[in-house]
Structure formats: C-alpha cells, structure tokens
Length: 311
Image (cartoon, rainbow, N blue to C red; front, side, top):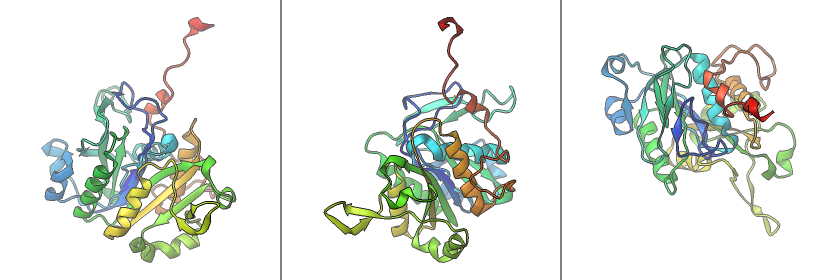
C-alpha cells in the first residue's frame, strides 16, 4: 500500500473546493503492499464505489498512499504520478472525520467524458495486476485529529492483512544537521519487521537510512531520537507501526516549499528503484524521466496565469 505523508495539503483537483488553504499545507503519501481489505475490514473505514465495481474487486497487495501530509506536498505529488502513470482504478473512499472536507473534479481526467467525476479528500485506488493499493489524501488534518486518523488507518491496514506499507514523505531541508547535509537528500526508514525482510536489499541499493538527531543539541548529544521536521504524521505513523508489528517503510526527501514538482519526480524514482512499478528508462534513479505521466490537474497546480490586463 502506498500513502503520502500528511502535514501539508496537496492542491485540490481542478474545480476543487475546501478549507485547506494554500498549497503550503502539509501532507504525506503512503504506499503499502496488502491484500485487498476483506468486506468486514473494509466496511469499518472504506466506503466502496457502486456494487457492480465492488463485486469485481480483486485481492491485492497495496502501497498505502495515505500521506503524511508533509512539506511541499512531495508525497502527494509523487502518488499523483503513480496513480496517473499506472492508470489505477478508484475503488472507494477512506471515510474519516479527521480531514478537512473538500470536493473537486477528477484530477486524473483524460477526456471531457470523465472530467466531471467528483473526487474528495481521501480516496483509494487499486491495480490488481501489480497487487497494489494506493491511498491519496488531498486535504490537511483537522486540529487534534492526527492520532485518531493514524489509529483508524493502521487499524484498517492491519485488519486488511496488508503485506507491506510504504509512506512517501518529506522533511524541511533547512533543518538538516551537518551529517545530513552530505550526499543524497533521500532517506528511508524500516520498521523492525520489514527490516528483516528487505534490510539487505537497501544495503545493495546503497540507500541511506534516516539519521537520528540529538534529543538535546548542545547539552547532551549522546541521546538520539527520530526527528522529521515538516513531516506531518510520518513519525507518528512509523513509531505506531513499529509497536504494532506492521511492515512499513518510509521514503522521504529533504526539500523546501516552492515548486516541488522536481522533488516529486526524485521521490517517485526513488520508490521505483526499489519496487520497479514502471520500467526505468535511465540508470540514474533521480532523473525526472519521461516514464511518468503527469496528471491533467497539474496544469492548475499554481492557479491561473496572470490576467493580460495587468500589462
């Protein structure tokens, strides 16, 4: 299953409305490998689309694209690329009162016929051929609703017998320590249960694990803690998954607010280096290569252009 990490909100789809404000709101995506939720488990949190499609829903493994809304919306943008490129089918909604309500047009419209389909703040997409489920989150959290959302999400993941969960996230570049300033801006985290399964592969890929930071900088540098500034609920999702025995990976990139499209390409290529969702066209996994399909909603990522009357 794949999820974006929530902390700042992704931009609404074309014609979208909601109370989440500017693009600077944070959110993080998550991708988990999981068997499709059983009927009983799914009913707790996921509202399915009409019965005709629901009846044909296959058993899947999923990437949980339920973001930890985070700085620059990098996780959500990366999940957009995954859904658009793989032409994933929307199979339902993640029903929760923890997110700011919003509604908009189809963010992945390919023709006028499907452009008027509505989308809301948390939707579930699937791709049976790759045993993949993705949760995309499009609005920020309501105050004090972080923990209830994490509990509901992880309950669904565990009740659905997800094999693995991958969370796509980001962290403030300006808050890196000296060690993190060197080398790649990409980092990963694995829960102990997943470390046993894929820890060796990460070493083969020469990936760099997220460093722990001093709990009291300048006073006591021996006590180290996990610190993900700007990562939204990423840390909470990860620590709760560790305690619940859930196989979760967090992939994140250090970045700053602004035009974060290049960061999204870097993060999704980082994901693809491991999961091989699409065939790589370059040996350099950080290239923003043409193998990814940009969704139609990105044309309005920064709103309309300047009115000619100003000039």
